[in-house]
Length: 154
Figure 1 (cartoon, rainbow, N blue to C red):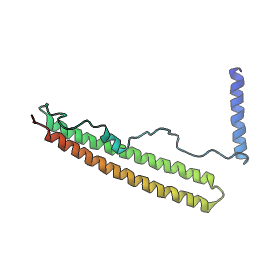
Figure 2 (figure 1 turned 180 degrees about the horizontal axis):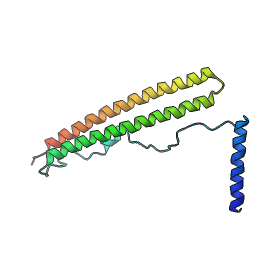
Figure 3 (figure 1 turned 180 degrees about the vertical axis):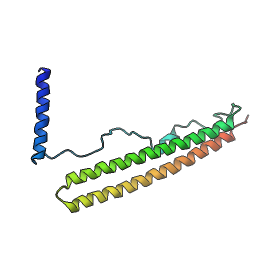
Figure 4 (figure 1 turned 90 degrees about the vertical axis):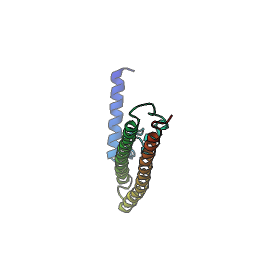
């Protein structure tokens, strides 16, 4: 099949589907986020990448300052991961609520119930994210303390 014929076929099919959707013949697709893979790290993932702090900088004459910097950087990356994931959760809620509007276009009570369920689930997800952030920040502090304690150790 020539490219021209294939292009025309694709265009005609797309136009037919779009016209059918407007005419009520075809249900529009589910509204979801366009991002298939996670675009953000979970805060816990940041701390999972840390090396073993025991003796990591021990042979350096700047061991203590390097340990402090690494712990500080860790906390910064945890906060950035939290901010990114939090924004992504907000975007996902927005897409899901748009889907409620699509799915319950003619049913206001169904639409409200759908959105309330999304808000509830989002609250649970956001609390889990905050817990992960707090745990990861504590892990950064602990990593820094262990690292500093290993400085000047034989």
